Picture 1 (cartoon, rainbow, N blue to C red):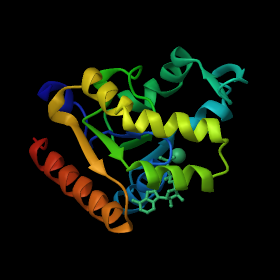
Picture 2: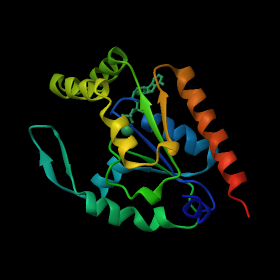
Picture 3: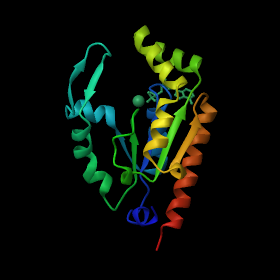
Picture 4: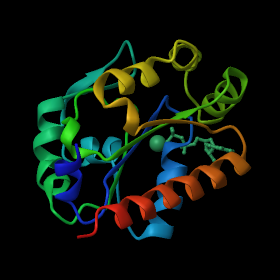
Length: 181
Ligand code: ADP
Ligand code: MN
């Protein structure tokens, strides 16, 4: 783990969580404050058609995971590091890409309101709220990465968002100090 980490100048950070938990908002805030590069995987998938069409039943793109990994690998393997990745699933990324995995969490009613506000169908709202209740993304992160690098953070209020950003920045500074040689 240490050998892998020391190969990068700056840490790579994954921000994951159920849709609506605040990944994109947090990634943007963090990127602005750290000058790290921000990669929204959903946008990348659309831009480069890294999918095999749309799933009408689930109203989403069918992700082509191999294409996503191929598209991102050069950037994620760079000795520069300093990339913030924003995506709602995390089990198909190579483990070696990340030094920190943040899992954002929200309560059901908060998430419900955010997803309705986003114009999601009732079905899609229900699915995502259920996914959050079942801790699907947290368990996926815990089974895909070393437990020491997985951080579950509550993202309900603006204060949560600010303290989460501050916390990750402090963690990144600590990481940089410990990985200088
Ligand atoms: P995601 O990228 O995980 O789908 P977004 O960052 O797009 O989530 O956030 C969804 C909505 O919820 C946005 O309107 C955002 O402003 C709001 N939001 C997210 N996190 C918080 C938070 N901690 N406090 C208040 N509002 C939040
Ligand atoms: Mn988003």
